[in-house]
Image 1 (cartoon, rainbow over the protein chains, first blue to last red):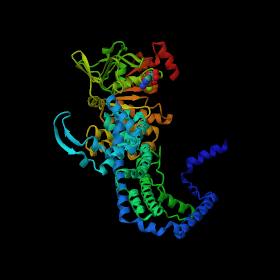
Image 2 (image 1 turned 135 degrees about the vertical axis):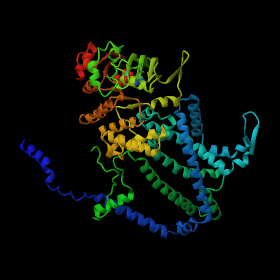
Image 3 (image 1 turned 60 degrees about the vertical axis):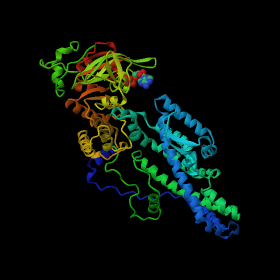
Length: 331
Length: 290
Ligand SMILES: Nc1ncnc2c1ncn2[C@@H]1O[C@H](COP(=O)(O)OP(=O)(O)O)[C@@H](O)[C@H]1O
Ligand SMILES: [Mg+2]
């Protein structure tokens, strides 16, 4: 009892006391990590050594072809296809998702049918369909339905191989993205739309300003997956066109028979792009995490600094987690 | 059904309460003889609401005059939240009449037929009715300030600077002038609820609805929120407050309505209803919460 009383007096009069010393504990040792790091380092060294010395890898060929214009053109085409198809996919996906959640039965049913069709048939078939669409519809016109046309184009000039590739990949992707977006929208608490409605906001405004920004946290990780997957799916356009990365290297190895080295060249580029996308995704996720955690997790550079502070004792490094707000939580 | 005398000046509930006649005589309390008939802020006539086959509101009739604070009490599931949500048309009523400041909620009367209002018109009606929720429902991806300025900027098209200045004033008013940049999850429940009140006030509503605003709060945080609401009542805001805080109902309320099973069981002056209820159901409810 008397101890408690004295504890209370301390806290009441404690203002004059010196603040206790900041804890400088010895961090927990993780010997397992060092062992694992050593094993992996040895394996990596073996791999590099093999790549450098094993003539069957024909490493010099890899170097030689990595930056040839044929390969770079293929890479560029692949990047364009991925970007445009994903843009169509994301925007189409958002529109389809909002349509599916619409109260209008005609609207939601059309979205359902679209998704059903485009998810239910192979992309390859869709690509070939768009490539051959001119056979089905030789001309495309704008005008009054069943009435006069204002303008008519020949389908072959409109739907080039590039356009057919974009249509095939993008429209298919929209169907998948719409389900991802819908899951994101449904993950947002209903109280959010309710509070926004009570403020006089209208449905589309609520979707744009309140629901979608919160849904992004759920939408982004699978969208990153889809983008990386799309990067490689673009190689399917080789059935109708001959400009993507994989086709470029195929054309080279068909001529010189260096199959493995050229496939390695293509894979290196796919890996490079995937890595860039992964880093990009990380920062987009951080952006949409604002307000959702009391402090944002540190970025890799910040973690790196923290590691050095902890293990090597550099103490002048900047604080690891930036303060975003002056007051403490729930002051 | 009973109505309650209107204090012309919301700042003096005590005086009006003292002069008020028994609740059966609605007009007797209108002390100012010269006033033209005042349009009730909220008028419900035989309001019915069902979810599927289940009837949740079974004919609610009540009246709230401008400047009045009405406290709605009753056991859980009695339809209090549902009634509140009908007032700003978050729910559609199935029968009866419900009007705010003389205008039907969600409908227009043409001839003898009711026409549903368009989404834009319903939204317009809602801008004049503020609502505060039990679970705050702040927008977590926006700071306190952004939560408050969002609707004035996007809905009322107020200039950003003016909206921000007004928002800062409101934050000051609810005692959170220094927390403008905080995200909701950096705030305590009581602070969040006060931001939510400021957010509703930013639209300059003529009516405020509170649905158990302090029920989700730790006991020591309830006082701050009630103080803000009391201040609002003193400033003359018309309020309907669903609450279990009987002290607040007694001191701030001009009228208290006890609901049970989708009907109004008893209503009148808080001091009478809360201390000497006439109905057995009211009595047994009060004995549980007091
Ligand atoms: N969306 C809904 N669908 C079906 N029943 C509902 C719905 N909302 C509320 N109810 C029912 O209506 C009744 C009244 O609910 P509510 O108005 O929330 O009561 P209170 O706020 O007084 O506790 C409850 O029985 C509840 O189960
Ligand atoms: Mg309720």
